[in-house]
Length: 85
Image (cartoon, rainbow, N blue to C red; front, top):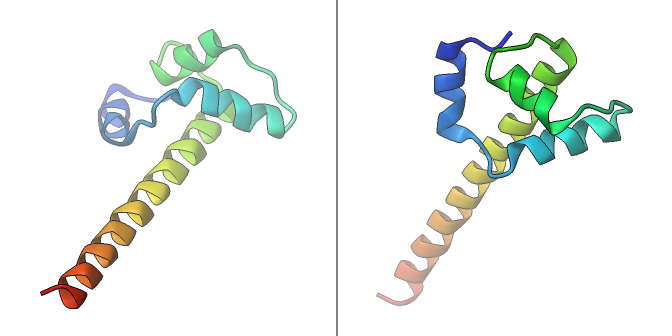
């Protein structure tokens, strides 16, 4: 079960339309859950290990993508500053 403390930390990196992304991830792995069920698991009202694991994967992938984008932007800015002083 996702606790209130865990949810508070997850909110910091919650991807837009996370329910749809979790649903897509689950369907690619042969599971079919409603958006409402995914929301209930995220909010701590229901326990489902499969959905919890999918939420972790989707949020982690979003965080990784965000960090990669931030790094690419930083590298581009550094290159611009070197090439155009």
